[in-house]
Length: 434
Image (cartoon, rainbow, N blue to C red; front, side, top):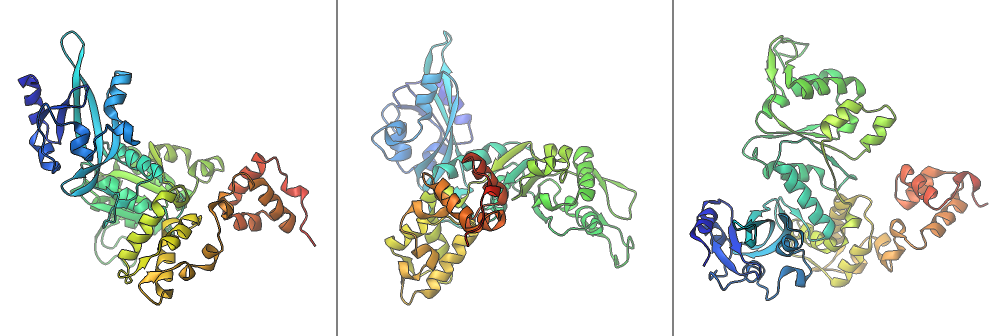
């Protein structure tokens, strides 16, 4: 039996924790761990994977990263993200595995501490990030890492990838979760509106200011300020935001009294801010202030294993919740490339459900461009081996018209030129077919 000191350490940890031997046997456990899993823990007999995974084999033999194995191989502490079988169902858990050595420096076991990832789910769930794919799990790891700090986070990704929900997840997983989450939509803000919205104003500060008003910075006190589409803030206003971030101080419009800001900053943009900096469209000093911890959100086409799960989830939360997709329809949905990402998938789900005359949504109820797909390889944005020939075909059809060709490929013009460079093609050498 493990030394009483280790048991005392385990019991003092608030999160679920166990001490396990190199052969996976649980030798010490705290009450939080016992309360998490329905499987009874028998000290000295129960294996960690039996309790957390209902499995008869270690994680690495079932296709997962095993943090204990990694610890043994590297001699260093490690972490991993797993889906555990808990009393509340399947639950994402971030696992921290630490080496435990005796006075002679010999490893006698491992301390495993579990952090429940409450903001995500591997099954349909309200107000949570949903998925199982490798790309999705990489995103969860980045969210968990960033949530444990007050570091400024920049969320980057295509439109419809879920940047707002990701920002909210970081907030809810942080120590500021019980404080406000304030969102600022940066598109269309002019100078006077920007200062009034962000910093607030005093009564009579300008025409129409009949009362004093708190700004969003003040409302976010102690919590999180989320600046959505920060790439749309004009250069003239970026310096005022930079001053706020550098000094931590601001003044309401019409006031000389200095206010102190206390918030955690999360920004988001679908634009490439690094390229905007190079073009002089975004301040470099501001970029480095907001991008201390950049996170790129995966596109839906990078999460193909999640499409069926997301489609069924979106259907269950719609007015057509009694309906179901056929397996054939779900397979078709998984072959599509979703330039509009999850937002587009939601529209497709609702449209297909509306076109179905009964409780089953079949292939014929899907949009025609999805029905026409016969395999994943035929989706134009996902061409791999024959991508070059497809681009040449478009160049022959449209000639030197990058905008039209990019739209046909459903990529940006910038991405098109990268593809042309990759395949050593010169767009100016082509003329449209007559």
